[in-house]
Image (cartoon, rainbow, N blue to C red):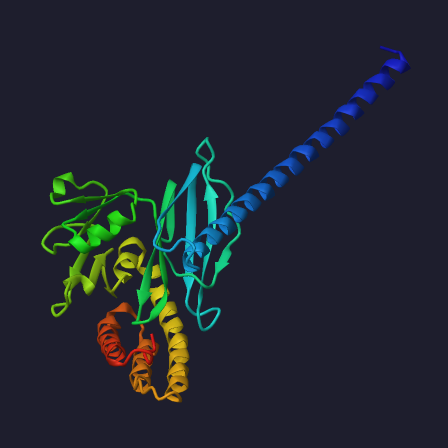
Length: 320
């Protein structure tokens, strides 16, 4: 007990333990920070890769095809839409996270901006498998592709033959068709107004080949309106994403219309008289004033008129 050497050894060990503990704490802290940053980086990189895949649909490399995206662990995709930024086209952002095998959600990656695509989905979707498919959208010339993403199970109740055939041709997963509600599991999309479903589609086109060429979709206690392939966008996306992207598409339509008006002036020098300029300006004004999908029926009628005018123009002088 009186040995100075013994006291010195005891102090050295205490010093070593304190310093070693501090170094260990620092190492654990730095490792945690690195893992957190690394996890965020991985999720951001995954979001970039997803956007790259989606771009292949817009460029036509995967046109008319569906794609299944599968993750080993359950992933979450978060989608936001802003029609006011990046004028005149607006933008969307996408970010991702995933669940660990213990069930904890990882750190969400950084937002990845999307400026040239129109992605329709719920604002937050999760799962191990995601299904993606594009549908072209015309007004009456092609404006863009509508890119649909979903992961839930859907049951289409009494779907019309045209819609049933289009979905089956895409070979989409997680969608079944039924003529009996008792055998219709998942989110029910009903094409009959008298039944109680999560999503209800009503065709409003009485003078068309198919009454579902334009109509309305009731979901989440709200009505949204569509025409053409917007029917798929309305079914699979949230109301907020749908309305936001619709305004973005209208802005793109206006910019493309100006190009076609210039084209009409150019071909007029060759003796072509399309007489579409005034009608296009009229539709552009309707598109510019559109504040929700409720105004789409008036726009649809104007687009039909322009399409008829273009069809009557002699070959070689058609605008589109």
